[in-house]
Image (cartoon, rainbow, N blue to C red; front, side, top):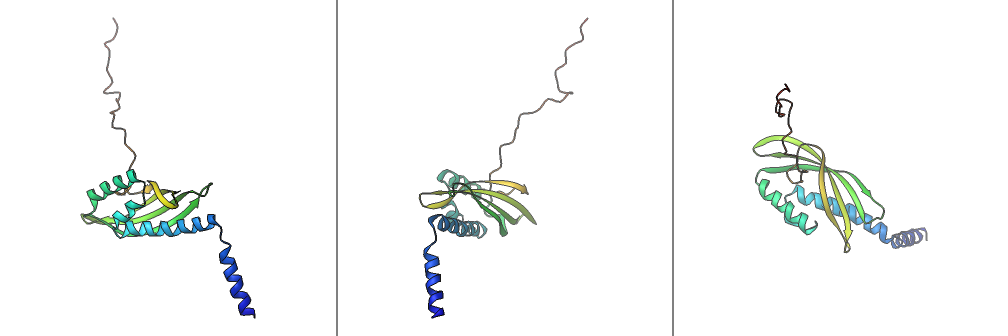
Length: 159
């Protein structure tokens, strides 16, 4: 009798999972799968779980480094679901090296995820710290030269 009660309680408890709880559980699963796809060079699969424009940009970055980049490992550091529960921020550490420079590097990446059309999608990524990671876009750098005092125009002294 106790056994039957426990089974019924387990079944009833599983049936009480809310859509929000299901969405959050699915996020954890999708985050693990997506980062594993990146880790194991399943780039087309990873790009399919991104916004179309970001997915195309991601594949362009892949084309530039695919033959040289080796991702040794990844670790999901944190998953934070926002309010509403259709947005999330994920922090991941990648350990990687290039075949041309076989030294392990580490990069901590922030990923923005969003629930759209019944699926979680990567909206954007950015490096928080560590080495520059070629699969994540870097913000544009200001290439405007700054004038130094030596370069500043001088006016002749007034007479």
